[in-house]
Length: 426
Image 1: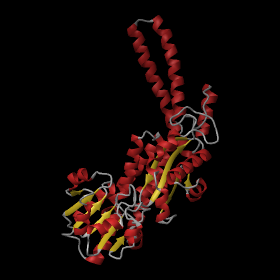
Image 2: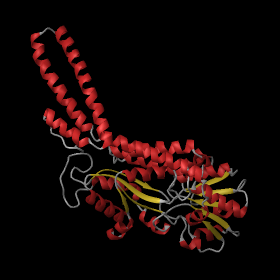
Image 3: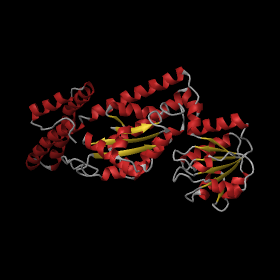
Image 4: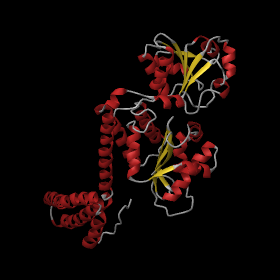
């Protein structure tokens, strides 16, 4: 299931507030015990908790929590409570904002998101990397269940397919590139200008690449969290310390703020201390704005932010968009088909265990009657017969799962072999 909101649902200021702490929320969800009580199944996550696995996807456009849930209502309550606690909001306020998707619509949404079809800038290239990084972060936090891992892996593959086969992928657009387009439209080419980047995260890397592609070779980087030197070393930029920041603010031609780690990293006091005597354009790409409200109020500061990007995002050709959507639809169908087949995996395993168990008991009897060589030949023969007998039932399980008739397969196992199993058993 998926609980989340995006730029389609909320104003960016409201989305910014809800995003606080969202990236680290998965660990909290996995550790959560029961909300209203319920049975324990002894699987991963808190043994009696409502959630098996969770992955958080928080970007400038969206806050989405993907959940492998044991119990639907408890999982919804747990996610809403965790987001509310992280954002300092009431649970009721958060719950009222969240959209909930369950089953196939979850894959359809994530695949479209990863392919850039649901972005503020349709076809943007950065979102697929953000989806991949969300999975890696969840893997490092040990919050990924098998089905969520498969879901995100398939989403990433679908995004690459869209990028390679459609003109959307060839465009290479991102929120950063549209923002820089706005600046160039107003002020002329950026080639040869001195630019200060605030932040060293994934978006800062995109910004640095986009600036170099436009001829900006004099790049400086300032990090509120102290990571400027490492970023500068790998991106051909000059690190700026907090003591050097006033001088940098005085001399630069453009500032791109994209740290978003603490919000309000730049203040009017900093601008005043710099002694700058000419206007400054600031591209603010952080969901949690790096600019204090006092900076935005300065008459000498021109801000290009996510609202500006949304207003200037280019449209896409219908044919390219349709082609990309067709690829996403096919990928979703393939994923759902694979999940349906996996639903009967426990039944197939149970059948194989039953048959191999019978063979093992028979071999115990035969080893007493025959020498080792003969017993080994008999064992190999029995295994060949077993594999042959199980081949067709395994194929039938896959066919029945795809057609939605898995319950009949499980009933047949009980009737023929006395195997007790219910559909969906872990």
